[in-house]
Amino acid sequence: MIKNYCEEILAFGQTIQIFRLLLAGMFIFIYEGVHSNV
Image 1 (cartoon, rainbow, N blue to C red):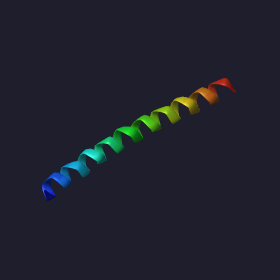
Image 2: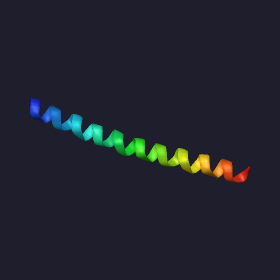
Image 3: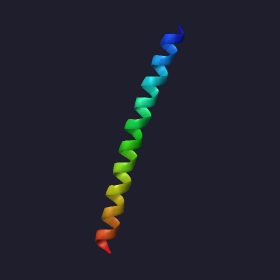
């Protein structure tokens, strides 16, 4: 049961990493777009 719990935490951590990468990518995309327009 404890092992299963650890696996869920690891999977959740990977999901957060992917979400953070997507968020960072969107931020950079918007940031570059705003500065190229000015």
